[in-house]
Image (cartoon, rainbow, N blue to C red; front, side, top):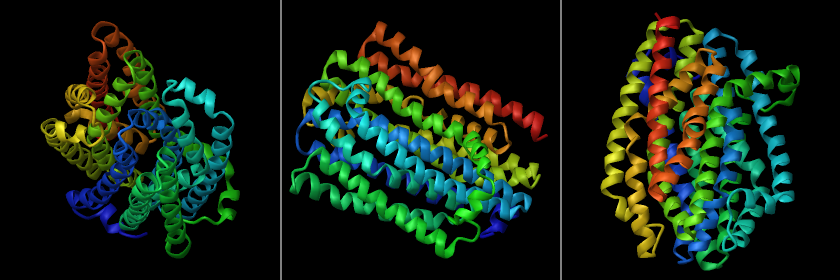
Length: 443
């Protein structure tokens, strides 16, 4: 296995930074990728098109959830197999992830093309945004297989330590998107259709790079279907381990659906303001998530190898790192909120509302990472159901009632405050779960 010394005997801090830094860079690149559409569409000065991108956002979350379930589940199990010395078993899981991602993408594509209009109505589309949202959705649907495959493969590469190659693939896809966005949106004047087309082509580039790596240079990773056919039932194990990550991605998108439905009562401007505020603060959660997910193979490998001492040290150091970075990023976002919101919104009144919402959205920044760390720990020690429960809390069981309750009492501000309350509550529960695992499994 590549970099086995890094996983087994090297400095813990060196191992964390080796795995986390490329993962954070990937997430930062993904952040640019994610905001590129909204930024260039915002240059058109059409609030309805900005809002339309936000309405379709949960569909991206559905696709990301599928990819995350396969990629995170496969990465965790493959890394655990490496730690236990079961290399051939790891190849079975690798092949299953790649083929399942491709086939699932085709099915999702067909479903989105057939059910686009009713889906958008459910997602909170307004008469002003429906036509734009449908244009965006149809192009996105065609690229669903590539998006799922690219994101799944990127996570699998971490399992054998190929973090730099994962970074290169992500950079290639994002650069393609960033170059095509202004061309399609501003030069060709394709608007939201051009934005979706650029995103799809970016994923095609990334997926192509990852497949070339696995076929030509993969040490254990493989796309050979013969391995997948040896044990197709193992897909259930992959999905069970990856389910918490998938739930997190899915609920994140659908939480915005519920908030968009509530915000629609206040007008398209309110939806656009929350969309801009969400994009502004998204990077904080993405960075802490990237650190935890980047280091997850280290946790799984140490558990598979029975090295409890190293696993305890990993947990302590990753926790300190995520809290420190979350605090610093939150302060930076708070201080720069005017400029950040101005990147997406040109209307003064809408921008002012967005700046108010940012304040609430960043308050939970220091503790968000604890939820991700606890989820990854539970997956690594084979406690999938506990990880599922934790994933349901932050963006589901806690957030949804808070959204409706605080909206009732405080209006638009209450919707933003609900995210802070849910982040804090989930972090407290996550801390309790980690202490329990520490005492029971790692003592």
